[in-house]
Length: 132
Image (cartoon, rainbow, N blue to C red; front, side, top):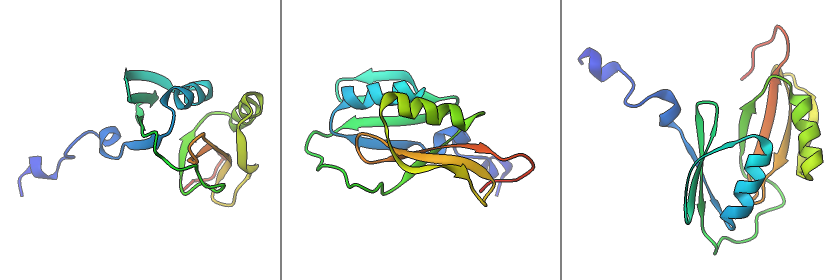
């Protein structure tokens, strides 16, 4: 194996990018932008959002069924002060799935549910602990 074969195929922030199918692109974009995601690109049925160097893609698929009451997955977003994001979630009327708290895995976090049933877990590292 050559040294170029050992290198990453693509930059780390390009390797595992999340794309969510949404029923209403406009509604979903509004929701994610209120949380702090920045719009990078938009097409008629597709948009790309950014959080620092990470990407979140949304593709509109109007035939999607209504989401489950319980998220099937969540996207973790590390922030400097999770309590500020809990306040923001309350202000925008987001549905909270898991209330804020200090966890034994080294994070203070909470999970809200987006308009299409995906959880967004905001988290802050607890001092002196490593997270997983």
